[in-house]
Length: 94
Image (cartoon, rainbow, N blue to C red; front, side, top):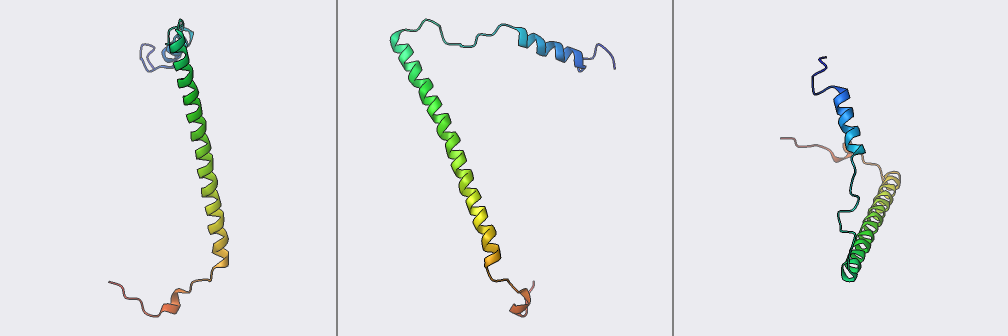
């Protein structure tokens, strides 16, 4: 391949490393907050954390209910009477 081709591996790798080495601002929020702003931000962060935990727990609960339903249906497959399709007689087909 041509070394000037933009789709080569080295330019991509150099771009990734340049982005990783670039200084980042971890928090776009100003560092000097007043009492009201700090309290509001704390409540917002706490609320977001509670929501994320609630979503994770709801996902786990839904997964367990689906697992329980699947296990119940699997067990019922062995308990129910077997179906005999020849028992019905004639079948009308269009």
